[in-house]
Length: 403
Image 1 (cartoon, rainbow, N blue to C red):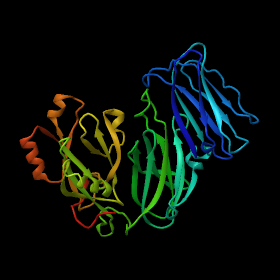
Image 2: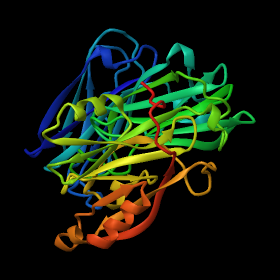
Image 3: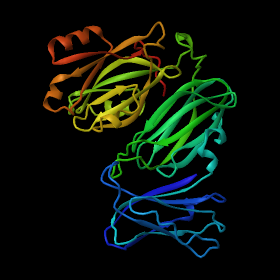
Image 4: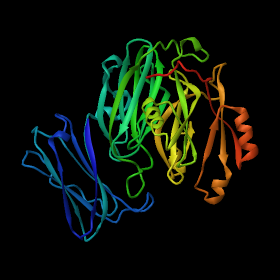
């Protein structure tokens, strides 16, 4: 699976830009798809470019030119390379005196991975399957099948190179796609991760582009390379049933005070914990606030408000689609909902800073705590409002850290 994207802008009427497709971007015996999308200033604004594609190389059966579908409409070339280990050039040209920006997508992959019933098998969990792929406006779904040979904890990680991407985990029931059992979102510099206890059998993974791009001019559907990995989680996961405390794998969640943003950071990532602990001039470590399950629960997504640099923890995987000032930092950890919490779960209270929003409605800022007394003091002495329970976690400990 290979692919890449390139953003360009034809500023001269009837101009041409040439892009090289290296041989390393072309999979042997798989079709090469090249698509150009004229882009506007927003999702609603149609692009002003009437684009044309030409694929160039001295090989047999090469498409010379695509159909002309008109201003603002995409053009596509599909070619089955007959010669390996060569590069191609693709020309993006403007027709009829038009100009404007464009998005070019190139992909070379097995078309079977476009559908769940023909998902590409990537291997067994102990073999640490790894896939490099591409999703975008020309390739909206990549499906993969992997096998869990024995009950245990599994971590699935999505890293996106250029833009946001979505990862979904499904059961296979009666030989077909079953219930969705996990989700994560990745962005540039922030992995998306699903960590769950899975029973023996085969499972489906889907990688899709986010509905809203963080890095394309029109803000429309994302377009990105990605790396997908599947690994075992060490420990004794047990059966993962709610309340099965004796067989859980848990993680410590450490709370830090950010002196710059004047807010808290909650993290279970040991590398981040070590990094923040080592920067005592900027971050104050405030201890193990609560624990969270690795092999139970649902993913809690972590976002940062780009205006205030404060963080939000929520089960909602689509916050930037509604509140674009928030940027995804991936999955923070797993936690419980009201409906799936075990008997020993504790509430994590969520409070909202009203004063910051009075200053600017986009300055949405939250505070989380597992301490009901702390919650009551904040509500009494500071301009915060109570938003109830954000999620349910586990009492803090010192022996549950996954390294």
